[in-house]
Length: 240
Length: 299
Image (cartoon, rainbow over all chains, first blue to last red):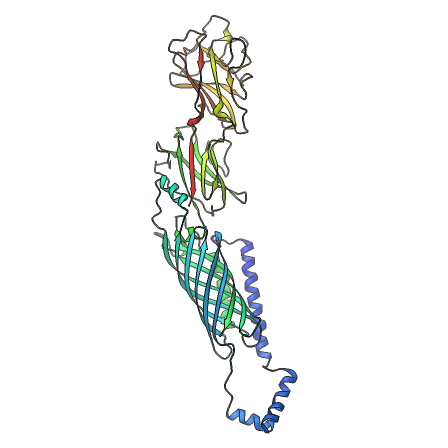
């Protein structure tokens, strides 16, 4: 967890590496989209010929017909995507996180989407339930098995601290009673990841998010009330 | 999409660096195992007076780092207090203490450093975030026993015989039974005359002389711990001293924290009779069961 104002060099390097990889992936895929037709090489040359044989029309007649009455766009990349995941939250001590997301992507290239996510973090001192929404921008959904994406959004969490009874009793013996054991806080988050389609409908997804939680602290400025969280998760996604 | 990427890139680089873990207890940070507070409580730990130093607590983390919690004193209830007498419910640190391995309470003289001095008085390992603190005393300290004989060998026989006490029998044998020391402490004995303690010297074993005999007479002292209070009286004392009703203490003293006053780890204690004439045997009582204890809780 990046809990300090000045991240270590190692942390900065990690962030740079993640961002660099995302940037490179986006760039490569964007160029590939621009340069690569849906059908390539001999397949592209053969398609009108096969169509001519099937319909009895010349290629010119086919093209003219297509110009007058274009076929409907078939966009297998857009539509809903459901994901389940498990991962780790790095904040102080690592904590296990599991959850599910439901996304919907729009547009002819499915570049834009919205995603809702619910998750539960099981930490060493309690649990944190989160619900958040994200705006997702991705590239290469129609042309590559690798689909990098970036996301930004916000959400709400509810944390419950659960100490062992032994610790609660020991604190009580010292006259210390923890009045505040649950809290709700908003957060904004951003991050990115990569989907790898090992079948047309099924993908493995790696996702990392950085979150800044706005804690309700008395007498503390907004900037100083932020608590940083980071998570890395592995997901399995299903495109409907 | 690509035009917005530099903005997202900037966010990725800058925003994770923002935010800090609050010093106060929060359910979110606690749930995630980011615990930065420690509660301390003690039994039998004496308040430190003027010139006796300051208690300070240090935690050892599993990566070998040491985190200081700052100085404090204790009140009569055994709760840590600050300089204004306010109870400190929660000591805080600027890093996660979840992986703490152990805690040490030391007595620091002067400025508190980044690690504890050798004057350790309590320590204990953390198990599930709770540490039971005890004195790191030598093994079998509860078996320590012994007696002193009242006489003054350094000024010859039959002179001021009620002004000295030595841990040696008439037959010339050691009268103290003390376990071997560890690397933290030395033995020291004190005579408390009219409520004022005066050292009789430090020593490491019961069978050899202590390190000094600053108040003794001109004759050779026995090769056993003891002292005659005959010469060089410090301010507030009159020598040859009348030890009637005085108290005799054998304490554990930190090796590197030599103070005039006795450390609070009293092992053996005895009271001299009201009318001392010389030759009395002062039986000592083991007081190690009164050593302070404590509890530390990370939360």
